[in-house]
Image 1 (cartoon, rainbow, N blue to C red):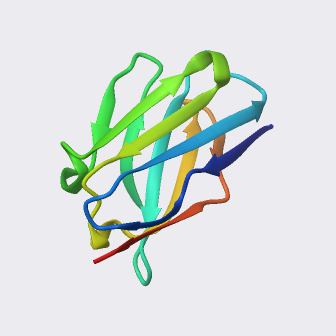
Image 2: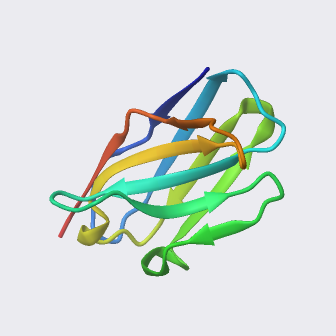
Length: 117
């Protein structure tokens, strides 16, 4: 089992920055994809950014150039640096660890990000 705990959410004005962290505890995997997802009110959960064990990254089009995902293997932690935040970035942000080609798929409890205009 893997437990994921997010932190770093909060209320920020448009144009501001936040850094989210997601620390994993429990089992560790040599190959794992770590990602951040966002669920805005009344909308489905969507991928914001992901990073593989080989450091391949993937970003949603609307966050490219503003958000940066990174990882620290030693700490089993993934980060999301969010700059130039917009009101439409508001939502609950969830981290997710998945092991490709296996059933291992873990989610954090979510952290609220609110961007005021």
